[in-house]
Image (cartoon, rainbow, N blue to C red; front, side):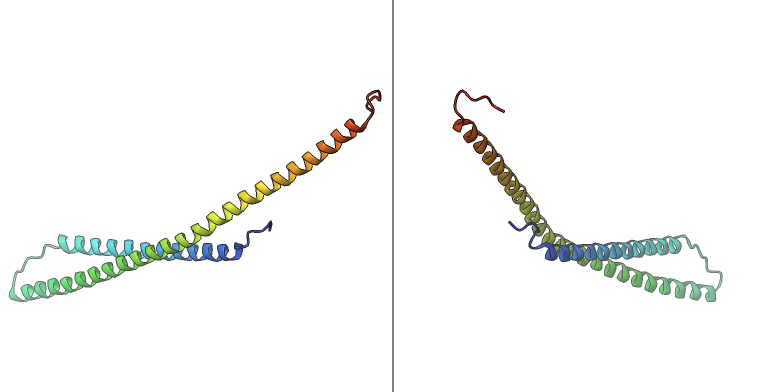
Length: 148
């Protein structure tokens, strides 16, 4: 039996793909967390601004600020949704890469088990041969001879 796992190169490739997918998923998760944090901070900041209009000019400025804030929140919501979609895609890629690597890892484990069984079988054959040779030497010796 071949001592080296025949698909070792492919397994290394699959594990490398899995590592790259995990890195991509971590990056996407970080972006998603950042977007959620920025959105929450913006909402908090906008919620705590208590401006009172003292004139028509200040009322117009407050209205313009609120419209701008609404637009900014919509942009942040869109960015957060895009980051979540990227995270879901990265998770799916990682899951696929992991699935492809796991099958090969199982084959490698089975190869190792079969290799160990073959080694034990070969060792048992050597032990049986030694025992049979020893038994034949003892059986071929006349009964009166002392063992040396």
